[in-house]
Image (cartoon, rainbow, N blue to C red; front, side, top):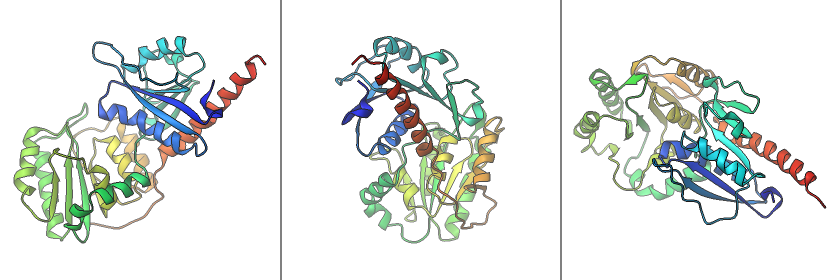
Length: 320
């Protein structure tokens, strides 16, 4: 019945397949697996298409169901009727059908006030020390060509509250040149939200430099390697996920300003600054330390406790 008491438990990770959405649910599932040393957690991805079609995995029924993104919300109600003993989890604020879930894990700044909800700072991510070590090995040759002090530069783009306009692009390029002038090697990656004009400008300014590794989206993504190999991490302020992921490393993180107002996300910025992870970049590099930000592991431990309690309750109700 429930997978916790078995040698293998089954977890379905449900999303529309977009990387940023899926990785939140998948990161929580992977963190949960790390909390189960004596039980193997078989994780299966379930994608919901734009048309609402779902391809179910060829696995036993799920013991735990973790969804993220709006496409997962209506599916939870349907699956709950089919798999009544499964434990249903949602990452983020579903904004509807709250009762479809045993546990809702929502960002602290969303202020979800429900009896089955728990708040976390930011969102779950897939970062782990094992992934960092694997990435360093995978990209060892490329990293060897950038000896000395290195900075990872994570550039986002337009969002509901922020814009990466020409003025911001000018600022970013200027800041990156000042880092290079200090002898700092740069590892730069831009997101899918980054405007094409900014992609083109980064390539023009830095694409041919020996002291810059500019990832252009072709080939294996070195994102984990950038975080692992950096002495400092720079992140545009609109990307809450990348800010939290950077803080997971325990390394100095600088927030780069964008055009716009933080709104409710200002609360997240304040929490990360209060933790000691993030500072604004004012032109002078500093080294500082802080406790590695491990919210995903904390939430996974809480989830395991709740899941185990639910599983014990179900087993006690089973006829002998």
